[in-house]
Length: 172
Image 1 (cartoon, rainbow, N blue to C red):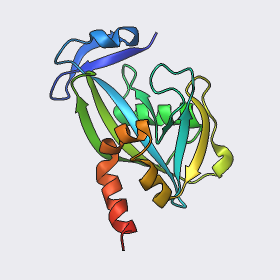
Image 2 (image 1 turned 180 degrees about the vertical axis):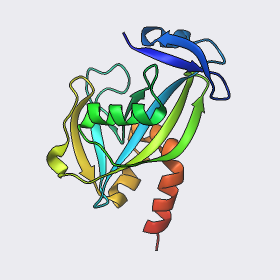
Image 3 (image 1 turned 45 degrees about the vertical axis):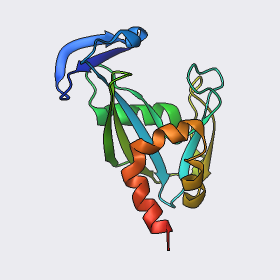
Image 4 (image 1 turned 90 degrees about the horizontal axis):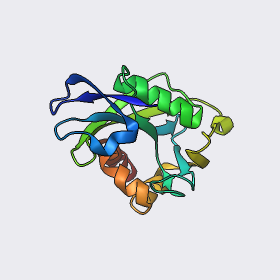
């Protein structure tokens, strides 16, 4: 059973916990933490993972992240590191916080991170039931694809501050 800490509208921990199975019942004004990690290889390529076709939400779609909900007692960065390790087998020395997005409808606060990894490209280890495939993509291809794929379009606003810098670097 997965248990989450709940937070108020200012981001303060309330002392309340919530079961994941009841996520749709989180009271108004309460939020749980979700982490989204954009993974970039030190050579500049981005990691895309293919969501398992059995997933409830966006099955069989490409996404540009590892991620998930923080467990009770975890900080956003601890949750991001755990999720990245679980879903890709990769770890990073440093995570850069790109932004924080409040989603009142889903009662979540999304912490978006950038992780730059130094590993062999075939070091990725997929998590059964979460990810079914992966590929590394150069910056230009990634920036054009992120506006087309259903999940990537949703993720784009979370990564926008970072991606805007990349777009400016790519534009002569």
